[in-house]
Length: 115
Length: 114
Image (cartoon, each protein chain N blue to C red):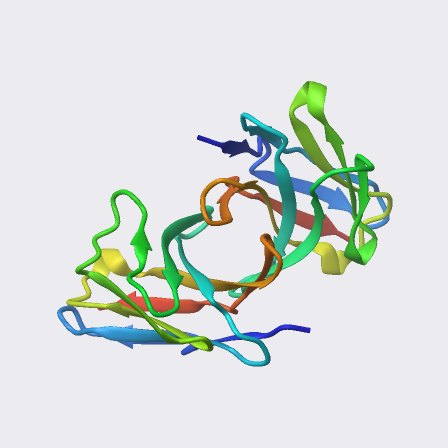
């Protein structure tokens, strides 16, 4: 089946630095990918929709300059958390549409800790 | 805008007992409904989905869910729970009009006692 590979699985960074998270579709082309954020013991909140070759669409309240999304190819989308602060610590998950309109495959997530 | 409510934050059942996780949705049209399971520190795995047709949907791992339009519900059931079913369960509704966005409920954490 379709696989979405997300790296790194976990990362610890210092406050003020930037962190890049990659999401790759391994055996299919992902025109659209989604980035979610999940706080401990809470639900997934959609941050943005990433479309290959165009600008990402951000949800209300998500700072586009802080969470940079690049979807330069049909197999790779990246999320860069710029000037990270402790409040950005969270679990970030990507997903890609693999089958029709609502066939999704999720990455395994990235645990970001900003110290 | 659509929304999903999972009334139970935490449920504990004994292994072998039956399970029902509740999900209520709010959506203007016929919804696309999903149940996902998440193990600690992992991504989400699709258990089952409902788009149309038979309102009783069978999924993986012995799970099923029933769509009840009159109650705006899509409850997840399993006749006999296994210890490996302990995880977080999310109900979600798909927005057919907005680039296939999913809106998730707050999740129900299932604990299984031996």
